[in-house]
Image (cartoon, rainbow, N blue to C red; front, side):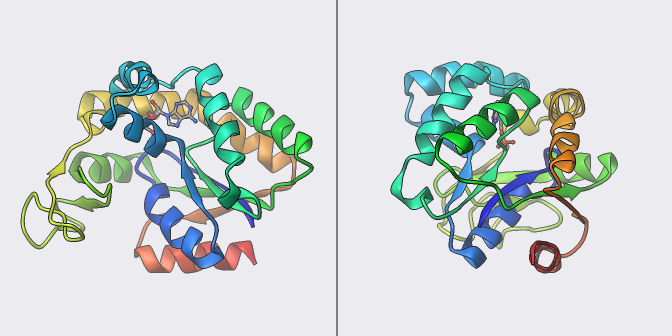
Length: 213
Ligand code: AMP
């Protein structure tokens, strides 16, 4: 299975990606997670990405495309992958198409998680991330057992800089102006499946799997 997950920030791409990657036994490749790992490790890539991420803007394509192409060469990605957060604009979608042609592979589907804007704001403003394992929780909808502490690994939870209200507004603008056009791109290729991303996490995963059958 070679799959792309697309949807606005807060649609639950990360959560659904984990479930779908486990279901299809494929690696979950999140460009946002790779950038965050680099920021944590204080690498040159991390330093560069941070300024864009903190403002809710896209990291330049030259950097992101090279990083993604490299990730696709790893052995775990040879028989399938799930891309989460990439491509993020038409230039990246075209670059990915060239990479796939070079490697003689094709995509199976692009799954769009559809969600209204007011729901996004509620989700993102309460989202908290574990500093250690990256698991996400929510101060209202998915409360950890102990406030501020990760249920998985007992490390500290924090709010992503780009989940702060002022940055979320810019991320939504970037999504509608730059990312939404890729939906049309993949619809025209006959690859697009759209599912409703509001509701219970496991029900959304089940409807994703049904849509992908
Ligand atoms: P995410 O975790 O997918 O919400 O990504 C967080 C941030 O990382 C985004 O707001 C961008 O700044 C950056 N980012 C992630 N994926 C990409 C991408 N494909 N192209 C450019 N920037 C990206």
